[in-house]
Image 1 (cartoon, rainbow, N blue to C red):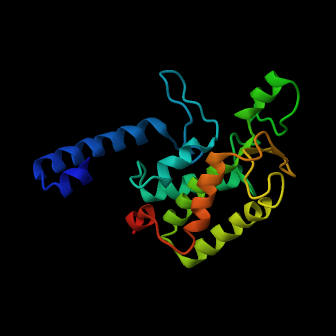
Image 2 (cartoon, rainbow, N blue to C red):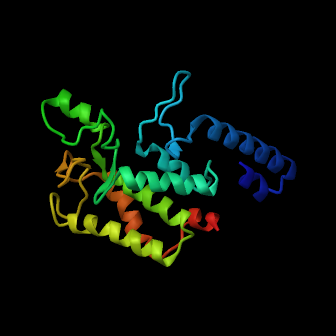
Length: 208
């Protein structure tokens, strides 16, 4: 809203929205920052905050207007890389968590129970790469590393469903592809990453 007010030349509104954004950012950091783990709580809802390490927090960094200062943004990316990154996307829960399910097997109820408890969602690789390049200032080294992370997905295009990206993969190696072998969400988000190689996004520009 601050950006829109600025574009329309409404200085009073721009200042008002800037103040509201600052208050929201302060409140978000006060409630969600997990100082012990150096990342964001997954849920804050009146009771004890949930410290589960999940991929939701990557959006606090990858979106153009981040809620986090640069040092915390970098810490979130490092934590997600350490616990959730796989060759095909991000796990939905860290393997160190007691609730982690590394295999997507069993009857429908068991499979549904694993869907958000460690199963890899390939489309989340896109926001992660955006966040990684952003906190590293869009450097060439960061782009080379991002390219290396995308290589397994490029190879996967010739597997499972020809020319497509599978919806999910098992959290444990060898990360077996599962469910829809052709998912529009996964294909769309990961294709965006492939097409953006060598280009700077708005988020990267904002990081400078």
